View 1: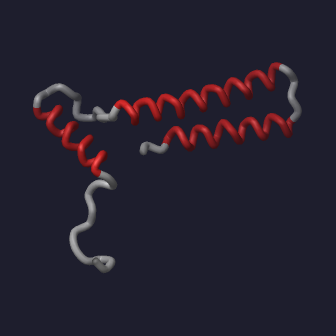
View 2 (view 1 turned 60 degrees about the horizontal axis):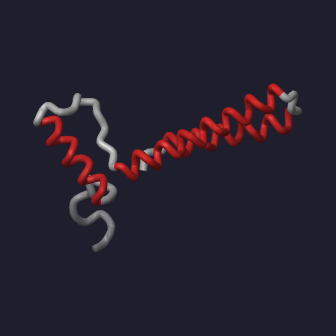
Length: 92
């Protein structure tokens, strides 16, 4: 199929389509508030792992500050915090 022909995809993957279906039907049954998100167990675990990486990176910065690390080391550690946060905020 050539580019631009046909309908645009609404969902990026079958898993996203399934989560949307589950969300719509849970809303219809009154089981979820309208702003709730539905995640699979694997998606939840992945998000928890990414948030844990952010916390560990932040703790590394706090430890380095307490130990009197130099500016170069603190810069490297803060770069790791920013990268971990960027990774954590992406929903897959």
